[in-house]
Length: 178
Image (tube, rainbow, N blue to C red; front, side, top):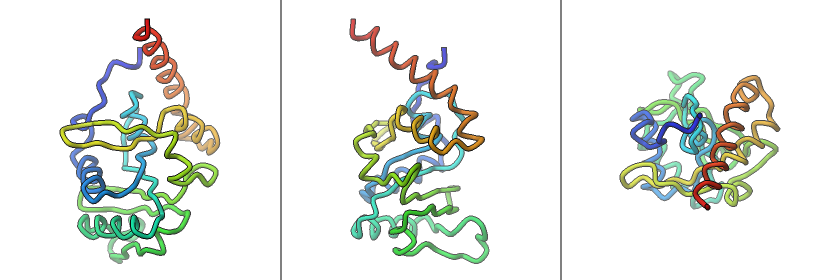
């Protein structure tokens, strides 16, 4: 049985929670994706960095830039250059690999086959993961579909765990419905 852990903010690292709380407090429209979202959906996976797909709406990008300034975010590949993301970077479809005072943070304009925040919104759920911390998290079914599309080595390695977790969640839902 894979679903033997209670995914909550207390089981995430302090840096993860700090990133997520800053995004929430600034009302940044975003969806948590990747291993952190899968963990919060009940999958027993290791959580590395925070991966977020954000709305590329102009007002949202302005709020996001404010958060990044607060977090002292710079690009990860050469942090000593202190290069900071700009509005045009955040408006792109691409990925911004950042490092902040709390750890790594990846901002994605799109994921999979060019899926944007708006595309993913119907496939996400809002979860309360800690005291006062409510997040929009990509659902496990869509996370699996995206990993199948991407089909990288890490994606293929984690897919059996995610599929089994989804299967167990469905069985649990059926048991509760009886």
